[in-house]
Length: 382
Ligand SMILES: Cc1ncc(COP(=O)(O)O)c(C=O)c1O
Image (spheres, rainbow, N blue to C red):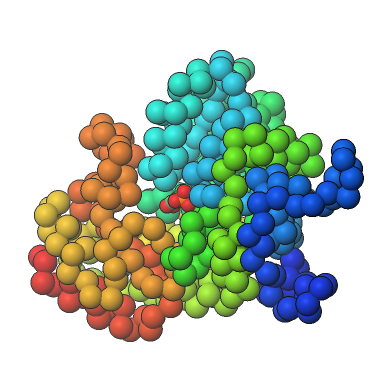
């Protein structure tokens, strides 16, 4: 079956007791057992629940994984992956990563004695150079945040595996309708399912998917032991969002490309970062791994200072001024003061988070309306 058919049918089998065509929201936290010490398919909802298990089957199928785990947030999922490691281990992470992941690595993992080195993920030789004998995991984003860098996943998988390390890929910006990192050699794929997978800004969720069953079991053990599981209502919402993922992505990617092309021609825009543009330094690699869908996130710089940039972000009428991304409504934000505010000045300078950088998430509105809105916001602010 093709992707969009699987997105609707796998994990969505009619309810055997009622015939309901959507998976019921099972709120039960505990389940009657067949006998003392004899366990049924579910026992306690932290360990597993029917609604969560349904969406986990859908996600595993769409990612080409043997199993997936649904978490209460993307950060809970990433944290679970880092808990595979212990004091004395080393993680190499891409420079162009979500601010919350940067914070987790530098302010939480360090408390357990895990060492972290950042290296540009779009340059595999620098990832290689950052590897140490104690490196246990390489963590990259399939489309970097907020500079939209594209790593060479197969090359980095080879480097990681040669060094005895796992490769984890946060593919939040490139959901499985456009990219499947496990097929390119990654060991773990992670999503903030809050974004494209859920798709409607109403469900906070995270996912880890793996091919290797032993790794899946270990992650399941950590998830069950630490408890960051996805609730039943959110599992239902996530399942519902996934059914339209492929169609949403196709439209959003197409709109993003036309808006990025328009931005490139704008007199007040000095730089556009979108992997679908020939001017993007990783464009050829993006084409190789993503075909003709390059995601729906764009970053751009304007010829203004910090306050002009802030003004653009505050002057749009359709683009909502908010962090997050990937939903049907378009959003705008200033990474320096919002999504990447946890970076200190030195880190901002090192990782290209300039004062004039703006990040937009393209939703499902008509692209002409979005262009009109951006144009008026830029022209009234500069
Ligand atoms: C790339 C990326 N990874 C991880 C996260 C964290 O996910 P969540 O907010 O669902 O915890 C985000 C959130 O914005 C993100 O953009």
